Length: 188
Image 1: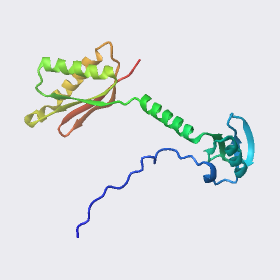
Image 2 (image 1 turned 90 degrees about the horizontal axis):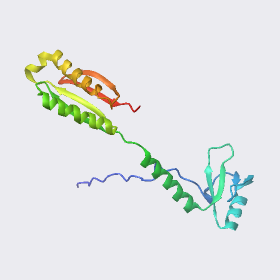
Image 3 (image 1 turned 180 degrees about the vertical axis):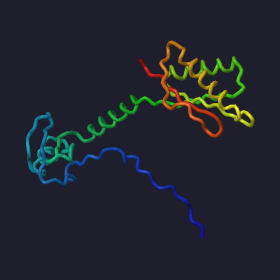
Image 4 (image 1 turned 90 degrees about the vertical axis):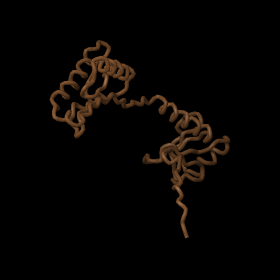
């Protein structure tokens, strides 16, 4: 009998911090902060839960790793919503740097060379990294020194642009099929 393949279930909330609330808090005593943000002090957990229920809110353990776990009286749904909002805002503010590739050939014409320099400059101005590859085929592999000169000429023409301050993230490296280099625009 043939078995069906099933993908493992992925828990989407795995990376999110879980907050214990009310009866799920395991500590006998907690350091309590009331709904106004005032420090109440060390109190037994069941008394803190009763205080939270009197106000109509939840007791949430906000820092379980402290010597005395810190619990706060608040609305759990609102608290989770605010945490999710913060997480989303941080995700939006993260700057994602893309790696853009530019390929050169050994027998590239002057015009094509200039077009690729301009394209690399556009990528660098936008804040992306640029990987420049030069592939050597057949008998071109015998002229590695000329290929190296072509790569250095490409880099120097980019460095000659006044709006860029270019730095090599990975220097010129020889690979089995040719050469490559990674450039980054360092913001002034």
